Length: 175
Image (cartoon, rainbow, N blue to C red; front, top):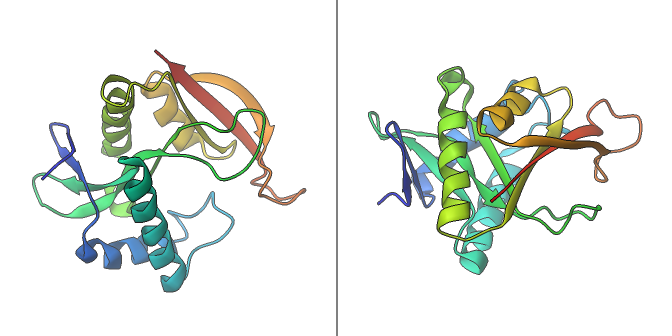
């Protein structure tokens, strides 16, 4: 059932039953604080469809994360390929998003570490990056805890000039 397992988490393909929690996550201003906006139900469902399409095309992607003790969908973590052009793309990025009630338990670090290991050990990737707004210190701390290293700051090309979220930090890890 799980593609990747940690002591507390199972990473798996998405189920239809994950949609309701994901829609709630995408409408939660705390979860979406460092994104340009919250997502409507239609936008969240479209995100799930894009994630599933990426899986079908690549055999990896952003896995649904389930708590092994509760069997509850708590968010996602995994690997994807950014759709914008900059000096470090094309690349494989690791990303995560968890429901607010599951913050503060180390789930993002645990899942991200397992995904990095999968990317290097199973997929034989040579480098994985991660990026976020410079304001998102929680995600930057996850990057550091997983052994990723600061590469540089950059202006995100899909975020408008002058937007508080435009300046990003890029981290990376190589084998």
